[in-house]
Length: 422
Image 1 (tube, rainbow, N blue to C red):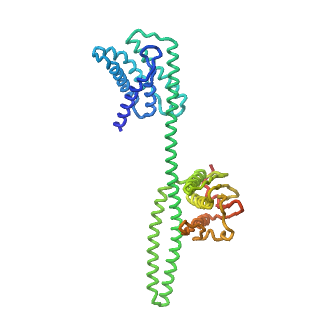
Image 2 (cartoon, one colour):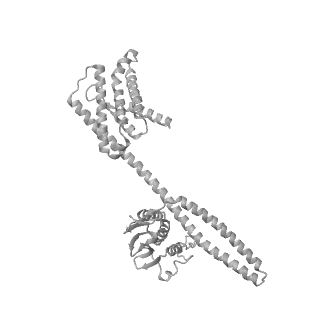
Image 3 (cartoon, rainbow, N blue to C red):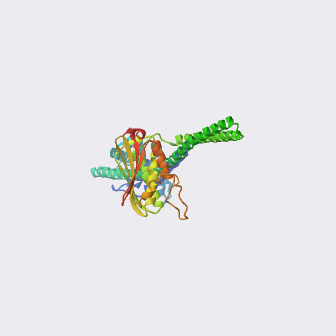
C-alpha cells in the first residue's frame, strides 16, 4: 500500500514539474501562472489518499530542481547553480504552502458543497501565491506588487480552481455511474439466480409432499398385504423403504437449497426495484430476440415485500411470454394497483394473443404453443408455475383477450404480500 502511495506521490511531483513548463508570466518576471499548479491541484483531488504535506514538500523540491537543472543545460556552469536555485526556490514554497492548506480541508467539506469547497481552495491558492511572492521578495528585495497583479492572481485562481473541481466532479460522477451500473448488473444476476432458486425450491416442496404421500401409501399397502398374509408384503415394504430413502435425500437437497437461498437473499425489496429488474431483464431478452419492444410500467402503489422472489418469478414468466407473443414490434405494460385488500399485477401486450379454445389449457403443465426452429416443443411449465405460486398465496388469475390486447391479471391478498407502506 505504501509503495503504491509512494508511486502516486512521485507521479504527482514529476507530472507537476513537467506541466509547470507550460506557463505564462503576466507580471513580466518569474512569478508564474502555469499548468503546474493546475496539474498539482487536479492530481491532489484525484489521489486523495496521499499525504498532502509530504506530497507538497516532495513536489516543491522536484519542481525547483527540475527548473534549476533545465535552466543550467545551455551553459552547464556550476557557479550559476546557486543563483538559478534562488530564482526558482519560491515556486517550491508555493506547492508546500498549497499542500498544507489542502491538508486542512476535511473530506466532509468536499462532499457537502462544491461551491463552498471551491471558495476555500481559491483562498488557499491565493495564499500560496502570496507565500511565493513574499519569499521571492525576501530573496530579491526588489519585486513591486500592484493592485492589478493581486486582482489577476485572484481571477486566475478562481477560474483555475472551479474549472478543475468541475472536471474532477465529472470524472468522479462517471466513475460512480459505472460503479452503479456494475452493482445493478450484479443485483440483476443475484435476483435472477434467487428467483430461479426459489422456483426449484418451490417445486421441491411440492415433490416432498408427493413423496410423503407415496411413503404413507406404500406403508399402508405393506400393512394391508401383511394382514392378508400376501407374498408381496416384503416387496411393498422394500418399496416403502426406498421411497423413504428418496425422501431423506430430497430433504437434504432442500436443506442445502434453503441455506443457499437464505445466504443469497436480501430480506425485503420495494416494488419499484422489482419492476425495474423485470423490465430491464425482459428488455434485454427482447433485444436478444431482435425485437423492437417497449416495456412500460404503471405503478399505482408502493410497498415493500419479503416475497419478492415469487413476484419476480410471476412477472418474469408473464412478461417473457408477452415478449415471445409479439412478432417484431410491440408494447408491453406492467400495471400494479392495490384495491380492496388485494394487489393486482397485470401484464398487457399487443401480441398475437391466445386462442379462446386454449385458455382452459394454458395453465396445465406441459401445454405449449411454442416450438423451436427444429420443431421441438417448449416445456410448457412457465404458466403452470405461475398458477402454482398464485395458488400458494391464495390468489387468482384472470385472462382478458380482445382484438388488440391480451391482459393477464394476478390477484394476490395484500396482507400476504405487502410488508409495509412506503
